[in-house]
Image (cartoon, rainbow, N blue to C red; front, side, top):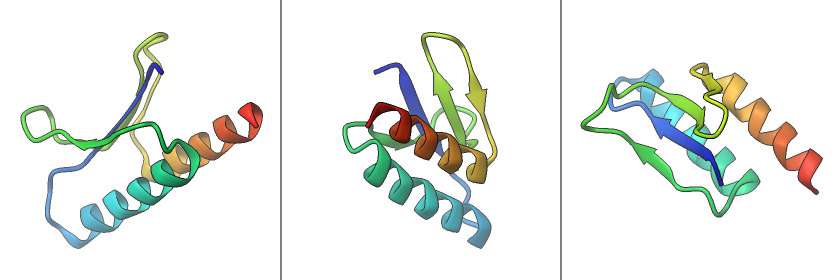
Length: 74
């Protein structure tokens, strides 16, 4: 699969809640996809399609895109 989801490395309440939101969405809609917190990289929340270069950095948009991708595949 060409999708990658990265969580934010900040420990602020907003970042933690966004990471939890993304981890739940990943486990529900893409259970074979690994949710990673990129400690060495930029540390920003990101959904990335390695095949097309498409990226989304807003957590709610990532959840919605994950849901829509799942719905079109099932």
